[in-house]
Amino acid sequence: MEIEAKKERRIVDFIGIYLKLEDKTSKKGRPYSVLTLRDISNQDMSIALWKEIATSTHRFNRRNIETATSPAIVAFTSLKVNDQNGNVFICC
Image (cartoon, rainbow, N blue to C red):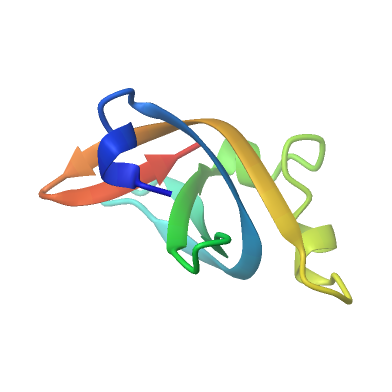
């Protein structure tokens, strides 16, 4: 997926294989999770999930993804793309 080209639209869709999920806190103290996926072209993408999404099982079922017995395929739609200090940042 060519993120640079899609930054112009500011909204992207992404499908990939689950690699890892990390809990973090923003500089303002707001909790969020970072989900890392790998797409079919072997490109890794990190997606920030704010607490409201990451802790809501009807929006994101973390337990099912983390405990999958085979590779978990995850799809996101309408992700917001931000460019912060030259780094592409995608959030949901």
